Image (tube, rainbow, N blue to C red):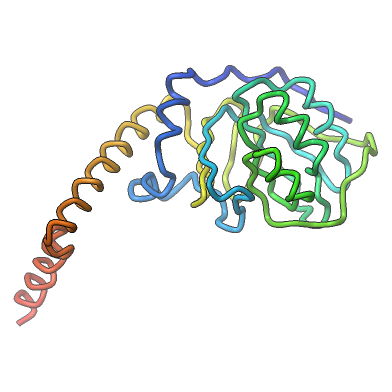
Length: 223
């Protein structure tokens, strides 16, 4: 049986634009949750994208639902695919890559493998997965669920969540919190540029960050 729910409300384009300037590693200086398993790696290391989570749960070797989803996705959607523990079959390959790219899909993350990496790179399709596999899914027409809560890379994802992904990983943010987090991260990135300028001017990193002062204070307290 296939469980298909309506498409989620898309993120405000202004929020997406804001998120696309944010590095996931900058958010990692603030948050400890919401980050998918680091084994989900970027096929295109240079890509950084943000989009609206459209979720799929696709058990075992059946990719029927993913083909159906290609007629529903919208520009700016980010596909989040729960493979229900199947790490053997690649549900994503060259044909899906082209269909998703033509539909304007921002990116995709699969809790499992993909195939046809050369075509993914040729199309410039931002994709995160657990690596390649030559064993593919089939159009079995058995079951699946779309736009339901899923678990991908150890993180719960709901339809409509904000997804931010780059070379360092994939993070899930709630839309109501994403704007504030993005602005905080961008301020941190601006501060980092100032720090780098001070380093180039000859200042020591430990003096700028206060690391040396912390060590001295700790040692003095222990005497």
